[in-house]
Image 1 (cartoon, one colour):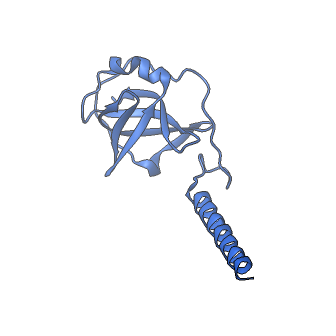
Image 2 (cartoon, one colour):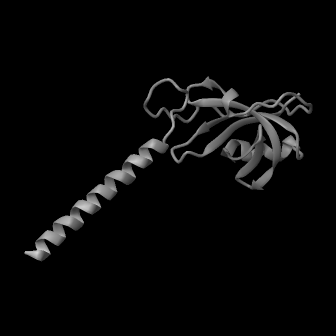
Image 3 (cartoon, helix red, strand yellow):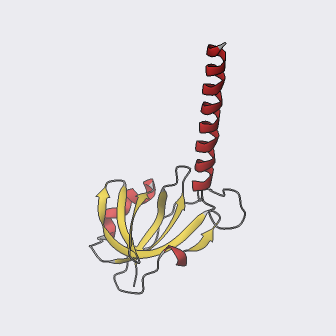
Length: 142
């Protein structure tokens, strides 16, 4: 009898833990584009390439100033800090440092941008299924 009660108590604890963890995961998901309370994440179409890079300075924007440009695609401006590895770069948005992944198309031509530390950049990106921000277009800001 004690074994049966112990088994039921353990089963209830495991079930509660599962629902608690699942609920926390749902709270960490974000709406992309702000159109509906559901998750709206789409990979953009097109090759994502931009025209020749331009060198210059301008104002920087942080995440609150990002604007939606195409379905599932966002636009951002930041200060380029450096390349983390072949797949990622680090930027400074306002006072926050962030890492962005480079899409395959951007990786192919990234060296042609000749970006240096503290260059101001404009970029388009989307948030993938894992919550990673993936850059689909980038250029130096004039």
